[in-house]
Length: 259
Ligand SMILES: O=C[C@H](O)COP(=O)(O)O
Image (tube, rainbow, N blue to C red; front, side):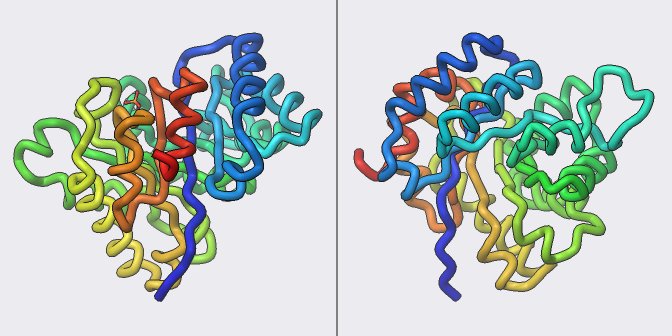
């Protein structure tokens, strides 16, 4: 079965750039990216919550082709959940995406499979596409258990998710040992787990769904290593942290085919 998946390059800004810096950064990206870039690759940014309104205004006002989304979403739609931001709020800001289960959320905020699953459901319930983040730590990698570990995370996050929703999800494989360390997984490492994720999606939902889902790699992706990673058959894009804060390098990643 051949399905053409549009590559997705998503910049996760993490806790960087205030709303004024966000405007300047998106303007810089918009100035650099051409229609040819946008035709070839979907470009998205995931700014902090406090930037989203400014980014929305800019994207809407100038009809930019840059998509945007949040770095997290509450599992609840409303109520007494101090500090949380809900799916309806993000939908009102026209967010396309919400990252869910990033390893930094799992590690620093105790997000377990149940919470991640509830957040995936909350995103779908509100018309937001989850970018589900999965991936193993160094100890798991050293034990050679990266595939079963990561697939268990996928299984947990997709519990109860029907095929028509699963077909639209984005899954980002991010080995924790490669995040922000400069230690990039080899293209073969990325393919091993991204391919296993697609095979698991085929088991759970059938080939047609599995071939539609975009599986990204994340972990120290930069302009220089993007072509090798993107050459892998089951890697459909990148979730970029540090390099997404540098507009020139992010554009280089978007133009990985031209290197
Ligand atoms: O969400 C992005 C990942 O955590 C990767 O971050 P990084 O590119 O800084 O390694």
